[in-house]
Image (cartoon, rainbow, N blue to C red; front, side):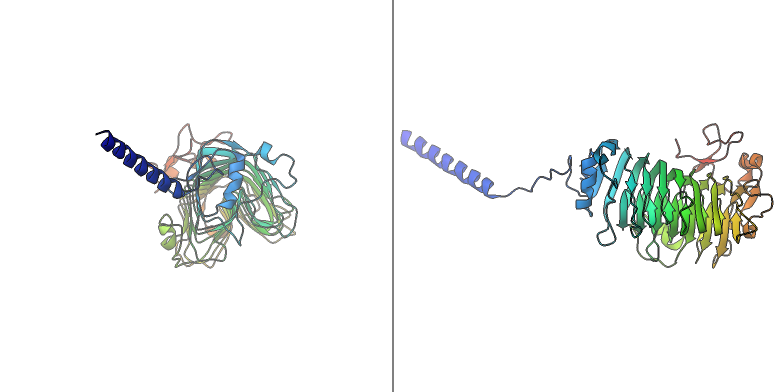
Length: 403
């Protein structure tokens, strides 16, 4: 009996050793210590809790990421001469998913003086990528040349949803945007910008290459929906606008970020947007309260308004196209390229007229009256009440998603 028990114990010990030996011989997946958690997949994104982890995103350009708390980059960047290094470039673009988790990334200042450097922002270059649920705050972004924005310098086939830039300054030569420098430039890949906003200033007297916009510098083949900008915009040459400097693009797109931009393929438009910042410039320029230059294909602008001043500048010296809504329109296939759009009739100097009849001039009191906006959706998209953004006297429509 004792011998049987001993034999059984010996067998159990042997089996245990074999199991342990097998377990030790199997190499487990290496734990990623670069982030606070996650494995970088869409269902289990890398978790970002510090500026150091945010900086490490550049080593995982095709990953999925989730910000877990507010991140202040000031201490992380102290002692650097150029500040934050943009994530992704033309050779190695960001192609992943970046979810801000409803948190704020702040003080990621960038100062680049080399004239040849472009694609500047928190992210430099992105293709078929998504950005969502994020606020960018208190950042001064200075690029050497063009394609500069607080979130992104250049992107194509991107989906940007619920991303906001507040108290940002964006400077450079051209293609400057409070949020994004260029979307879909020279490319037929569609993009989608939804429920985004910007506040601060874009461009200055050194911005001599054109295409400055409060939200986006240049947007081609892009749906821009339910967005606004209060940023002040200044530039030289052509395409300076309160929301977008240049807007237009191509038709018959077949590619975009997953399914979120399907509508942009067949129906590219700026819809249900507004801009309130002053838009100014000098030189041979095209300036508009909402869009500077509106060109190409079947794009349309629908149910939008602008209230910012579009001041005249040396009218006897320069060839200037200025509009309370749009500076210049050309090469459009759509029979009604601008529909249901308004601007304040005092936004232009008294000796200027708004361009081409596009957009309808209204008094401040008319813009403060809901009945002015015939056909607009005040059930699900717009509202006009005490929560609305205000000027000194009047209250104008605002988007329901605004806090």
